[in-house]
Length: 195
Image (cartoon, rainbow, N blue to C red):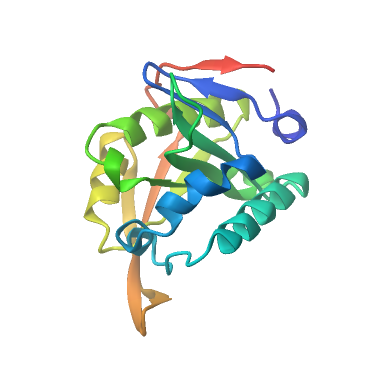
């Protein structure tokens, strides 16, 4: 599946414990549960959502971004439930060099269970095998130790720190740069559902 085809129809991805499917407007209540948690949103340097309407507007923007081919978002759900517990995305596409940035967040009740590692492995495999990406980047805040460990576990290489690159809560934060090349990815187990 080429990048153009993925923007026509984003397939669902299934792993041992989770399913990743395209984000929908009716996910707003479940997404608000983690987008409104300051412990979650602090990890990536954004203020928590204060209202359901704010989350609905955010989802509508993501749906619009997909339509304009700016990003692709999946929600994570347990395999036996269709309630969103997190999200993963590709964005900042640089099609000329076959590169994209990956982003992710997870409801705090599901931290430390290995679910994000499992989800990102599926998304990375999809990016390299189906989208034909050559390089995938991640740029978490330097204070986000959990994200740093996750990226290193998945095989990303730490490539440096951009000093005071992100403005958050009245101060500048450092941002780490990680990269993973197609030839470095050992792969994950997932099934792509073409529905």
